Image (cartoon, rainbow, N blue to C red; front, side, top):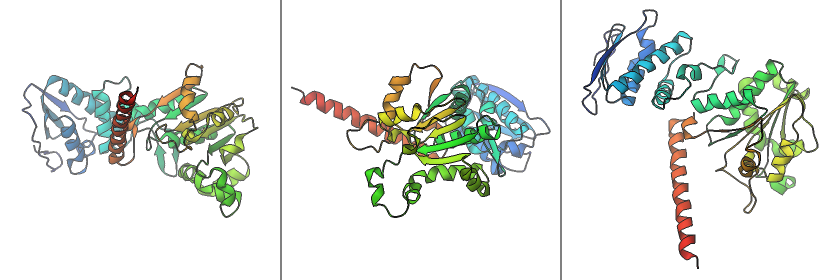
Length: 350
């Protein structure tokens, strides 16, 4: 296949004969084809890989396509969504195209363009926005509920997006302060044996929260915000006995809380506040025999009004594309291991 519009070329060898219907898509003249096709036709090749039964040809500002009617319908919707994203001033990349195709193939209610053009906050020349449908639903649930649990594997943006929503709420004067906390599980009772002051001892456990905060707030202003109490980063134990009013409170790594700690944290909720609890129930670091507060809270609060459980999956991982594959592979391994353990216990039962 040859793209005559930009002098670039790409070759498509369908895995099966395309056949079927034919359709032509005309791109508005104000949109440069290279923006839609990507450098060296990278985005065009992404479309071809995702729709292998479709043969694509590009000439000037037109796409011509041949293939099954259902695939052509997806391609039609895809081009419309990508044009909407471009015309909204957002850049396209391979990840955006792949996720858009995935949403269209899954027939989700939300349009890909609505998901990928939702801005949470702009800071230091970059804009933070959701990259997946699950992430969009997660931030929408934060807007719509007082307490939200974001549960999912590493790399799904649970804490990062919650942090962005917190900073946005502070800037909009919806809250007066941000409180970030997480349990220092690995330290346990051994904090006293670590060198340095208390801050030195707990700093490694709070560092991920500091790192995310530095991405969204001018680093020079952070000491001032922390000195004034506008932003507070503290271990979970420091929440006991407090009532947190007019605050956006984030509890990170909540899978490492005990049931008692989880109850203590949730009952700190004050007037005008919002809480987001994030964690991964497959990554519990508690001592053997200790129940994770995040695991059982779903059974306790599942029917409570204004409490929402947002579940993210491997499809919402936005780190390196291998991370999603790794998460899914571990999930399959865990399922097989659980099945083997159940089989052993049944066969060994008297």
